Every structure is written in C-alpha cells, then in structure tokens.
Image (cartoon, rainbow, N blue to C red):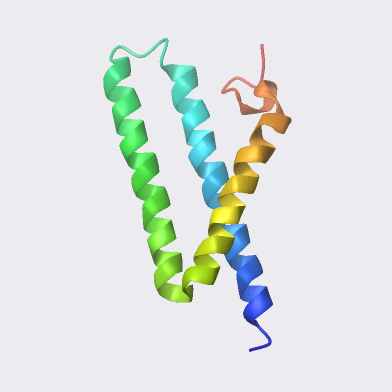
Length: 98
C-alpha cells in the first residue's frame, strides 16, 4: 500500500505525456491545414487518431489502476492543456518559429 502515491504520480505523468502528444499533434495538424491538398481529410484523420490514442490510454489506465489512477491521468491531461500555451507558438511550430 505504500506504493499507491507513487503509482498515482506515475499515472499523472502518463496523463501529462498523453496530453503533450495529443496537443502536439493538434498543433502539427493545424500548422499543415493551409498547405494540405485535402484539409478536411487531414483534420478528420488527425482527430480520429488523436481521440483513439487518448481513449486507449485512458482505458488502459482505468483497467490497470481503477478510478483513482484514471482521475490522476485526467489531471495530467489538464496540466498539459494548461502548460502548452506557455511554451509559445515558436516552440510548437514545425519550423521552430517565424
């Protein structure tokens, strides 16, 4: 029972990584929409892949750890959502800035 806080921290860190991947892929997609020959297809494919990835990760955490770990993972996702705008568009853009 002493490893429970450690495992909650691992679940939160997993949520942070999943959130960074989700929002990073969203930024990558948004940057390429203007130059894409078929932006609708790109947007739909990106959305489906990102959602499938996040839901699969959340499902795996829920099965492995229960609702407390799922809540910690969701907290990590929220932290990623709040942290990414502070990185700035120059770090997130494909070319590294204007």
